[in-house]
Image: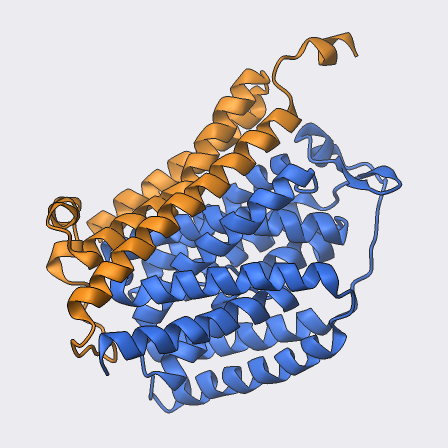
Amino acid sequence: MIEKMTKKFKDTDMQAVIGWILRAGVLVSMSVIFIGGVIYLYRHGYTHVDYSKFVGVPDFVSNPAGIIHGIITLRGRAIIQAGIVLLIATPVIRVVFSAIGFIMEKDFLYTGITMLVLLIILASMISGHAG
Amino acid sequence: MSVTILTLIILVGSYLAGLLGSLTGLGGGVVIIPLLTILLGVDIQYAIGASLVSVIATSSGSAAAYVKEGITNIRLGMFLEIATTIGAMVGALIAVYIPTNFIAILFGVILILSAVMSLKKKAEHIHQQKSVLAEKLKLNGSFPTPAGAVPYTVRNVGGGFFMMLFAGVISGLLGIGSGALKVLAMDGIMRIPFKVSTTTSNFMIGVTAAASAVVYLQRGYIDPGLSMPVAIGVLLGALSGSKILVHTSSSGWLRVVFAVVVTFLASQMIYKGITGNI
């Protein structure tokens, strides 16, 4: 009991932090996607689109450099894509903060488990790039 | 079709998909893919990418609320995420080598399974048996009820973990949250209280989807013009759904209607997959 009471960082604190990160991440990324969407519709509202054949995505949103350049030049789809990247990052950031939380709780077993999950996501990112 | 018209159609359709997915607990992904592919003729690869994005948005949004209430078992979720992320990575990597008509058939089968599962009666079981592995991994927990915290134990950790690997592969392959399979693993195999299973499953879906989304993002499956209305629509629909859910206690008839619709969509997917029309 004494040990429990002296613990500075508890599971309930971690729940509050994780909840906040998820909420903020969704709010921020969806706002970015929305802003990008408005610009995209404004600029390309009457353009003809066809998604019936898979040809990948336009070049300027297929790599980080292109997306950054697109944001600077206010291209709607580049801004949307940046929002999507932020959205995908949200649960990953949640995992990072869980790892920090487990370290603060001195729960080394779960620090290890959380790190492993991060490594798997990293491996997935790299293998996607290679393929 | 012009960008504006297509965006509006997808926005409305995604809203309805998110609403129904939230009310029935199936998730928006299982409706949005048939909607895009069968009704709007979108290539299934783009549909999978857009669906994944919406899955991350809705699961993260609702997980935020559940985590704060203290129902979600974070340790259990973290531990099982090892299995679901490995599965999701494998699913996304092999998706490239699997013919799209096979993916459509598989999607239809999983869709029917999910519909059947959503109709099943939910029996709340709370166990107190001890499992050595669950104890070592600190998986046992408690959840808050109006009558106070209810403790529960976790059984068959190995079986649940294996099922989660499979759920991860399906999620990565089809671009859905595969919440039905996750609940099946936790509720059916590990014997965790239903409330904890559903919220913990939801908590894991975002990370699982992110693990395959990083692959799809680099392969051009995630088109911004298509994903934008899908993500916004599904998220708003899911938010409305959760508001309605608080006010209505019985949604039995809705589940039946939804199961019929989903089964119809599933058979369409299977038919198109077999005839090579996808």
